[in-house]
Length: 145
Image (cartoon, rainbow, N blue to C red):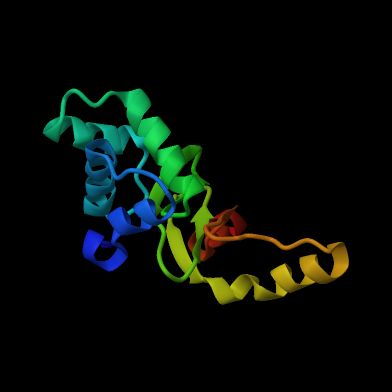
């Protein structure tokens, strides 16, 4: 689980010329406390327990703001947009579309793809947090039976 001490969100937000508001702190506290892969509704529910005056629109806007600053990454997993604190090292997920199993994989698995995109298409891919749908081994076996 990521903490404010490890990331120092207040300083990172201020360095980019923005204010570190109480609402932003509450939303980051909630997301850090959840350990990752939280929907906006999950974060909103947790924020509401501490500050009922913070509305859902504020949570949506703040999550988008934090994502623009690369403090938070999002991915579509099983039809839901989920968010997590950006780790220092990018990682990705293999998501079984049948059973929902999520396997985290290291960034180096996509190095060849990023290099090929640069070489063949003159395109610098920014792949920070990717969810790749498919079938896990167990579900593939069940399908084959």
